Image (spheres, one colour):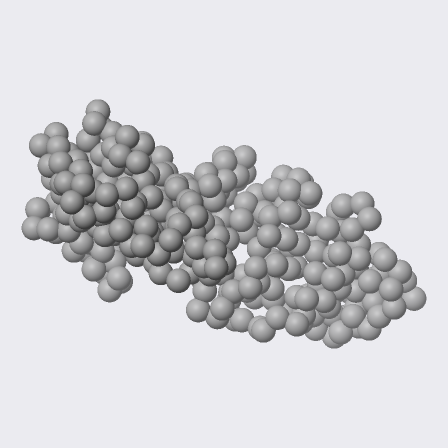
Length: 340
């Protein structure tokens, strides 16, 4: 049995007194309860100059006891923080066995305003949530998560400049915030700044783990940016990573599966000697459960599979094009007339 701990994130204590109290209680707990049976080293995570605890992205093999001790210790220390988050996983043979998300709690006004914003955001009350996050930031302007979440809400409303500013402010405080990098990537992609989009998506991938949906969404969108730039090998690689991953229907990436296979096949068709791989991608695409979101029709999918079959000299391309033509795809009709 192979167990692995993965921890990402940071905690900000705001002022020196809170930082010193957190460090004092951390040391006391280690000495009294845990001894050396924890996964982290004090000097590696505590930053006196910035009054914060920074883990970034950490992973190691572990035992259940070490994982539990580390989680309980970090959860205890978080009560002294004023902003930040810690995401902690226990994996067994690559499968999530336990997952914990920790944020500061307590009755400090900036913390309560932030949690109010979270609750309002979950209820879909976007404008009210923005006001709550703004209130939290007015009380403590160094809250990376508040900037990131307010940026997400601005993005939903189409306020792209405000969203961009918030995401950048979030990253200026904590550059490991994968959601803020993801937000900037989406804005750059929509703004035709494809190289920038690739950079932001790559940072988001680096700051997340494969068990998080954002990791795969970034791979998919990074593939789009590479494809638009004609970087077909890199696009195909990203789409391949996405396509060979299995998603359950409640995963937000489930709706992209057919589109990803279509784009993967198209990218492969632009590479030398990859026609059969493209055909395999299109075959797989046609077997995936239909979803309303992707907008794909059977006609479009049959059109592209026919192209791949024709490219590699396989039978059946005419049948595919006939079905596409029946569905109203003029290109299929032209291909049938050209290659009788």
